[in-house]
Length: 203
Image (cartoon, rainbow, N blue to C red; front, top):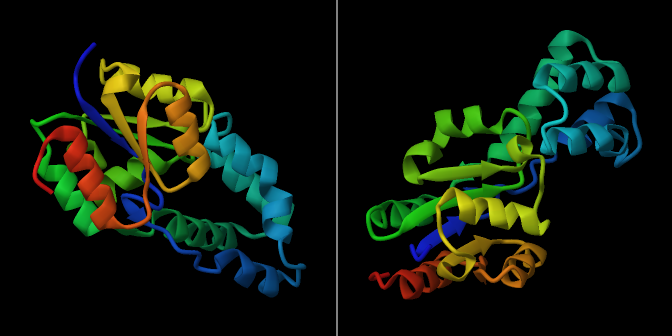
């Protein structure tokens, strides 16, 4: 396996995902202390990230744990997805699109059940890259070494030939530990230059 490949994270890299404050607004509305929403939902969020719960079950748990009506659950989840999906990092996406045919392209994302359908509809990541490995579909999250191994295998590329881009230092370090090249995304210009150096393409 000698194919050159670039594998990117989604949230914080291909998507710009600043906090929107949706959970705090619901805490205020429900007269809950700060942090209560995520504390009550912690195990549900975890289950959704590794695909051990369905979207329907997520909605049921939200209703039960926060005492919300069906319309309130719909509004609550809409706020969650607005923050989760953020906005597209247009500059980086445009650059990655120009790499098609020069190298193999993939995505490795810690995700949540329902993410593939929404991101495909909004951002067409399934057209941008050849393979997308979502944690909720493989049941494994970064920085588990098996997540990086799955991403490399999906592109039929050895880890030493893959450059991984992520905005979390722990994930970058974990990628390097399995033999991948890796870059901590902080700014588009630096990331594009690093990808260009790996691929041998003009930035």
